[in-house]
Image (cartoon, rainbow, N blue to C red; front, side, top):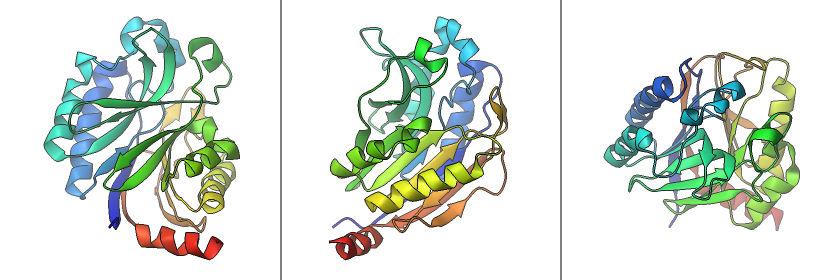
Length: 252
């Protein structure tokens, strides 16, 4: 029987220096989440580089499924039993460029999800995905969304049709987008009777300062917990499947 899942949303202020600087910080934060009992850890959009699209002219800032530079993340996931969702510029085996959320599993395999709603200069760098990837963990189904995906109800709706229990959004929402963020996450959760999770990039970004507010939403659309500031923060919650069942049964 599916019961509870403990997971951490990592609000992360990416460091200058690209992959080389940010991979060690991911490892440290996964260790931190493990101390809170997390089984799943979600990082923001492009967490391995920050939202610094100008860096992506350097092929060394892209990763692939077999990339040895991710071995440290694979190892911490193996040691802790955590599945970590990291944000990266990703090249598929055939070279297709993706703006990706990469689920690194304890066995070392990587399960990718791709942003479907690209905007602005992203359209020149990446190829859009077609639907939300849905992970399975401890009897739960977790849909992966990247930033602007969450602005489109059909993205979460398709995830719900695929059986998702959790809508996990890796994003960059900036100062002044507080209301927009709350509407997106609350509505996606309430409309589809899912939990919502947001991992927002923190600090100052090329698009402006972050508004913070990473956190968790219930299937009633209400906030369960959210970040206190705009810097790096590990937020952990234990979600109960019985809450989903209660709301879903009331909707039928």
